[in-house]
Length: 554
Image 1 (spheres, rainbow, N blue to C red):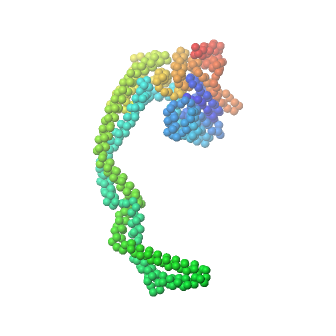
Image 2 (cartoon, rainbow, N blue to C red):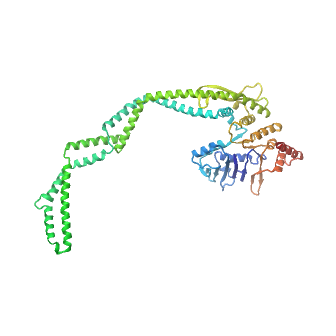
Image 3 (spheres, rainbow, N blue to C red):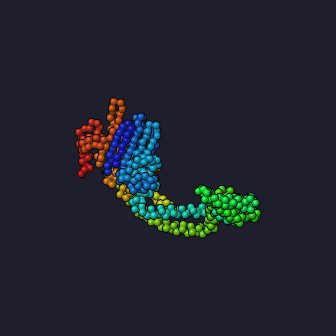
């Protein structure tokens, strides 16, 4: 339910905070006092477009904030899906700054208007005399029937199966329709796969081949270097190793003559050992060096193949080629298993169709049991609302195909006069008739269907006296289980209020303001009396107002 509504700098409202309560909340006031302004502000909370024209003070921002308590569980699911905090109190706020920019917040977190619309669709049911479209929609009419038939659980099961059924049908259609296209692609896929499979790329071979190719390309230079090194170090007449050995011998002979000569002799010995190790390394290189020119050609041919495949598939390494080859193989396997997959899908679709048909029949049977119950109950309420000749009829036709909600094409038809023809509500019901019909239907299903906070904007226009009293009784009964906010000019409806708010204007030196006040007992009597006879109210009107209120407390 709506716990509170705060409005700042909106139209002629400077600052208003309304604390709503359970039951029937009545809002009254003179024409032009600002009752419709409250709905306009609430429209911002419902995600409607903002306009800077609503800013009375163009230097300040407009703020509209609504707090909701005991809201439907579906709201929690929606908030969690969108990664919003879930709190005991749900707060929705709109801000319009003088520049024209509008911002929305849910629990103090920025939000898009789409989210506000989805949230308030579950939180608010707005009913205005000339904008009552909900009861004219077939989907909503079917929801009414299913609520009375207690079909919610079965319909949810059916919906889950139906989603699976349509998904598999779509998958089958795509497989079949894509057959000719796939056949054309299959040869190309097979060619690509065979080309890669024949090449047999290995994940780590590229670097090894490139290194070996580089070595073989320089084999003559390497051999010449090794020969030159061996000659200068070991085999020439003045080989470096021999010269170092002679110098080391002479240093060793003079070790006792100076403390540092021993260090020099040791370093010379180390140089000689290093030269010996270099000789071993030279021999090792010679033994592993492949001088076969055919091997170089083989490596280059292999690299050419790999580089060409890299360019063709726009990759830079063999691991990516292997992944592409695996994907191509999966595609080939999938196509080769296509017939088996199609047969399996057909079997699953047939099985789902049988199960859906059974559940659809059960849904239909349950629905048909409540047609007369709804028709009788609504017609009785319409009679109480001075529409004695009006009635409804539920028209049900069996669909040739399964639908997302079963096999029934249901429409609630309406006629306002005896002997008239039952026709769709949108074709025959006037604004006043639609509002009373809507009230009759919603009060009938209130016990069976979860309803959000219902807001009624002057749906009692055109009715008065006893009929208005009956309408007030229906609203009062409906409010025992649901929060209602009703904007009205009817004293009979106002007398049924649990909470009565007065919208009124007052003038300051420079401007006019709208204010909202929760009326006390005596204030209620005076306000209802004014609605009966005008301002100031007569003594008779005051007594009549007392009687109207007291009748509701009996």
